[in-house]
Image 1 (cartoon, rainbow, N blue to C red):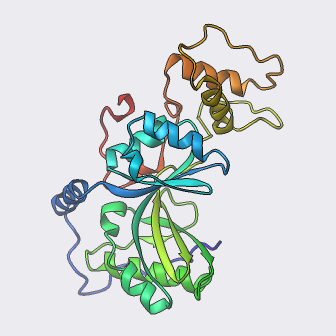
Image 2: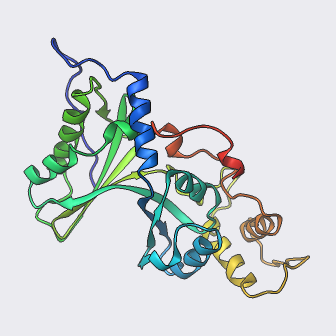
Length: 277
């Protein structure tokens, strides 16, 4: 894994006029209307079946179109569903919004295709962004060359709009670039912190079970039951993670209700009543 170094300097003399608020809004509206978009929902390996049931019962996409692999499910979601997935999925670890997949056997191929992505719809007027690069079975390897190539592509695209974001570790918006079999997949991490971090714990036990795993245990235990139980006992509760997840399920509470998400920093995000969806 590699993170991109700092990008190029800011505007120079004769730079293009900066994209206006109204022009960005028009681009965002077109992007919203163009959905649904391919989305990858990550899950702890071994829990894919539980996630599939959760996605289907939650009305996410068309179950017939789910593509399941080790560690996740690929499906088509519109932006509103991407937000709802982060808020309401109990077993998911992360939600990645695919921005594009294309051949990338060389730096030139990667640069040419990456610069054509709609970066402004994701970044808007943000001053910085982060990159996470992974590679497997490809000519291009995770490292500074790939990170610099993607950063240059972003810079070229945004510079033509009078915008000058720079790559920076720890920026609120992080883009994942996955190289496999000489193809690149570019995704926006819409979650930020892993989704097992529910946001309400103040003190954590030394070795707690992850909330996503506890939720999977609860959902699996309740599957097929004609009605929800009145009482759940956990005599070896430790820090109480399983009981807290069970309580949320029984009360119908959203697991992400107490936390924020990375997509709230994206240009396409629209505040409103989405947390109550």
